[in-house]
Each structure stands twice: as C-alpha cells, then as structure tokens.
Image (cartoon, rainbow, N blue to C red; front, side):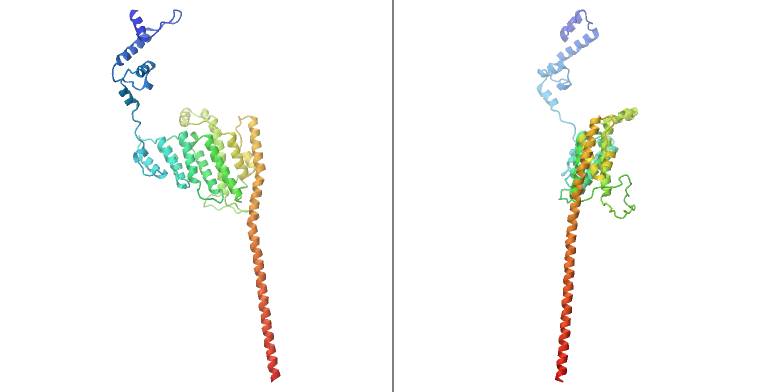
Length: 415
C-alpha cells in the first residue's frame, strides 16, 4: 500500500472518492514507471523524443522547459526534408511537359519508385500557352501514371492538369471564330469523363463549371462569327473518319462542324452524369473489394450545382434546341421540385435567347451576300461597257465603208 501511495505522489495521480471505482494497480504502476523514466532522462543531453509533436503532454512540457539540450533539439526539429524528387535530381535547364514526362517515365519504370504529386503538378504548370502538344502530354501522363504506377491524382493535381490543358490547347493568336476554343474545351471535358485519367475522383465542381463555360464561350464566338452551330437529328450516328457520310437532302446544306458540335454536346452530357453519379454514393452498390478501392482513390464527393446545369442548358439549346436540352439535361431525381422548376426556367431563358443568335447569324450571311451582289452589278456594268465598245467599233467600220464608197464614186466621175 505504501508503494502504491508513493507511486501516486510521483506520478501526480489523485485518488478517487470512495463512491467511485478506484484505479487499478496496473494503471497506477504504469503511470509511475513512465514518470520515473522521464525524470531520469531529463538530465541527459540526448532524449529519444526530442520533437515535441511526438511526446506526451508531460514529456512535451519537459522539453519546453529546457530539460534537454537546445542544440540537440534544434538539430532534430530542423532535420532535412525527405530526399529530392525525380525532377529535382534531374536538374533540367528548362522544364517542359515533354522533358518532365520523359524523366518521370524513366524514374517510374522501377517497381519501387512512385511518382510524387509535386512532380506531376510541376509537369502541368510547365504547359506553355498555345502549345497544343503540351496539353496532349498532360493527358498522356495522367493515363500512363495511373495505369503503370498506381498514381491517384489529388485535388491540387487535378486542378493543375485541367488549367494546364486549357492553357496549352487554347490558341494565343487572334482567332476569327470560336472553333479552337470549342475544340480545346471539348478535349478537356472528354479527359475528365475518361476513367483512364482518374480525374473523376479528384476534380472539383468549380473546375467542371470552368470547362463548361469555355465550351459555351466557344459556341457564342462561333455564332457571332456567323457559323451555324445548330445540328439536326442529334440521335443519328455520325460517320467516322474514312467512312462515307450520307449526302444531305435537297435544300439542306451539310454542316462542316457537325462532328465537333456533336462531341461537345456528348461531353457536356457526360460531365453532368459524372457529377451526378459521384454525389449519389455509388460505393453502396459495390462489392467489398471494389468499394475499398473506390473509396481509397476518391478525393471529392461533390455533385453538380445549379450553375453547372445553367451552362449545360445553354450549350444544349445552342446545339440541339429545346427538345434536346430537356432530354439531355435533367436534375437528379432526389432534388426538390423547386430546383426542377428552376432548371425548366433556365432552359426557357436559353431558348428565348437563341433566336437573337440566329438573327445575328442571318445578318452575317446577308453581309456576306452583299459583296456578291456588288460584284454582280459590276459585272453587268462591264458587260454594258463591252456592248458600247462593240457598237462604237461597228459604227467606225460603217463610217470607213461609207468613205470608201464615196472615194470610188469620185473616181468614176473623173473618168
């Protein structure tokens, strides 16, 4: 009993009241032993737990009060970070996505080497504006690292990849229409929807909204440039490269941008379905091993916002019209009726704004026809001038014949 009391005094323990459960002998003995070991080591210059973050409250207090040497403490706290990464060891004179991908491919070829997220972010941030090849390299890096190196992209890496691809694929020169911007945004949307890249697990809704806004901006620029963005018969299959496309009916003109517009609409629909699936907890329907793998890679659970549906509705109305927009863009079934009414209002507003764009396109077509009319008028004037010249020449020939006839009559008279 005396030993128990002395252990309690040394450990700072307090005996509980009689009505409560007393401390067991094993707990008290362990507390006393820990306190004795700590007191015995306070006077030494080397302490096994010099970092206060790895200490218990009593040991942290002892370190803070100067129980160990400050030089030893500062040496451990300011210990060097982990070894340099593959890109840091490569010490490239110029970091571009192509050079970085080559270095990381060689480094990741070893089974025990894993790609660091910091290196992947550097690869994405090094994408140069207007260099389409850099955007394609980022997409290739996402697919290769995920397949061969078990690389699961994080939120920062996903944002850097999307921004890098948009920056590289969007041209920097003066563009006459929005087709390059549309192609760039469509490519990025396809990479997000592709399971091979792994962006599904880490892309935020804000970044998806940014891609959809770029898509809509490209379509608006095309309309302002007088390019027809309306595609009829959305449900029909488009002829792929190398296949013969069906000839349009009489009175109809084939849209040269039809394939790009169909891909943009399909990518928009895929993004909406992707976000809806992610926020609906699909892991509940998976088996044990698949659910564990899915949750390990998942970084973001957020779904689509009303701003996401607004951009998607505008894109669908411009490309396919009201019926296609109501068919392709729909809210999840568990959303309230007020949100469904808001979406219907958004589609109605987009439909009301669509005729203005069509009128603008018709006006641009009229402007294109005006120079042709002026050219036809000029041709008529030239034809009239040629006719006058021919008449003048005929008149000259007639006068010459008259002069020759008069000269012949004068010679007859002389004879």
